[in-house]
Image (cartoon, rainbow, N blue to C red):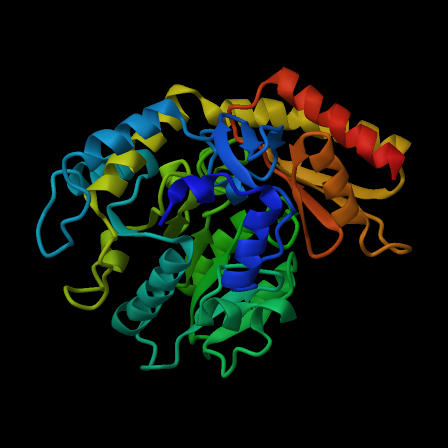
Length: 413
């Protein structure tokens, strides 16, 4: 194949190739990216953009962080994959580092976030039968309406979003769906002795940065302890400094029984995810009962260790907190001048604006197109909500530039 010919294709030709030869399971903005550095990305025509999606929070450390790239290259030259049939020299140090950082006795390494969610569900069910004494095949897991835990069959079985679950039945049983931000409903659901776990996102990202009310997480932790139910926190998107603390649960000093991490665990270089728990839970799974060919591979471990070290060395949680305050203050100022913005919400650098679309259902999409034209990339979710989540290395000057672009585009609309 002549790669030179491929490299000289226009943006429209590249998009046509995806349309012709790729599955139509995404609806991307008409921008073709080819390079990234820090908070910036460039398209094939050399145009520069502020990235305010961060690959759904996978590039918290910024695009192509030089320390992560160096860790990747160095390890790739030595050993990339051994499988778990043998030990490798990176997995143990990685597990020990994560144990020290998050205070759990064990880590189970996986690849994608969806795989990690599946792992947590299996772990919770195994614990329910071996430790809690729930009858086989009777364990239930409570989930919150509006959740997004991936695209697997179990994840869509938990979903209340028709675009996620319709057409994919029959659905996996064993999930109890309760209203979001409704403590009374949670207490009522926890009264069922067959409930083994409560799985939640501290902030629902895909639902449009929907934030649990103050005290909900702490109460959930207390009530789960009282009922001998495992609290499972999906921090794939909210974790690793995104919300201004290392974990979103840290805002209420909550320690989940099972912690799920992913996305920024590799800084966007390759798929890395992890499930963390203490021995009484984790050791319910024995050899041969769960695994992954690529989970815990030395390349992933080397990159993940460096990714975690970068978060700490550059104090990105503190920067996310400070820049988030500055950003929301600016967004609220834009809202005060433009009632088309119905609500501004967020924590740290995980934010969203909700657009009033009563007269034009395409308004949020058109706003994202306008912002892209002026050099800022974001994307709507649920039609009228625009998530705004830049890499955590962003500076005050870049925040102010983003606010200028967003404000100008909103005013035109």
